[in-house]
Image (cartoon, rainbow, N blue to C red; front, side, top):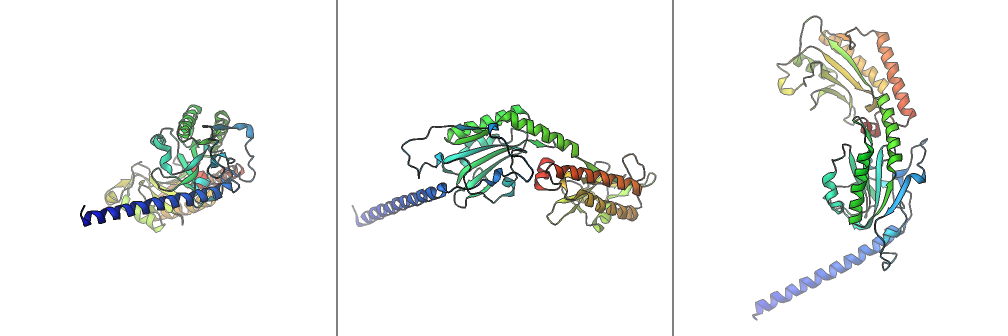
Length: 368
């Protein structure tokens, strides 16, 4: 063996030794952290009820153990034996804090050992099979905070919370789909030997039906139509100019929107011809009329936003020489506008009485 070969062999052996020692040190350090993190007891904020909301009864929840625990594991390594829901609950992601048993079917997985989102494997491929938004949140190992889990993200989690939204503008989810979702999660949990908390499907679906009925009752879209006299057509370019004077911006959906400080739409202006407004056709397109639309459940303080929309309608009426009419092309009088406002205020009060604040993140979920 030459001196060069001997030197290279010695270097290789040295590198392997360093890597082995570093891996051993990391494993011991992480094991120590795991034991410290999993012995603490905290309240689970994700299941806190809003003031006035009744807590769920314990008989509506079933605890399913997917795999028996290895008796050889000691208390420090075997954190699967810890009580369900005794983890730190500082919330990092607002979308995770919105999850609750009223609006979501939630299955909790207590992982046997820390893992990233990839631990759910093929589950991710069926995320869109249920016709409703599905969300996976995880309690991070390092910061002990809940955040939205990304399938291929590197973050390690000690618990996972998988939630399927029960109600949106498409209606209520079926009990059959809830059962399919539950079975899919249970299969994934069995593969990773996780402890699972599974709510009762029938009780959950009954609550969802009640919530859907409430949402259907308060789901209101209010419009103010602006049309020219006779057969006169409106130039899209003039509409855009008048809209800009009222701080309405043309968005990708083909409507002009008045946005709040957070970039959320307060109300919109659409083409009555159902054709979307587009930047590249504004110079040549025409319209038989425009409509200002207020999506009542999705805006904060909707009665006040209706007042603002009315003022904008009046300014557009003057600027473009239009008539303000209802859906039957009857001129809207001040008393007619007052009646509409009163109805909006009633919807707003009904939503708040049922713990759904108009314009809140939760309301935008339910009315999407």
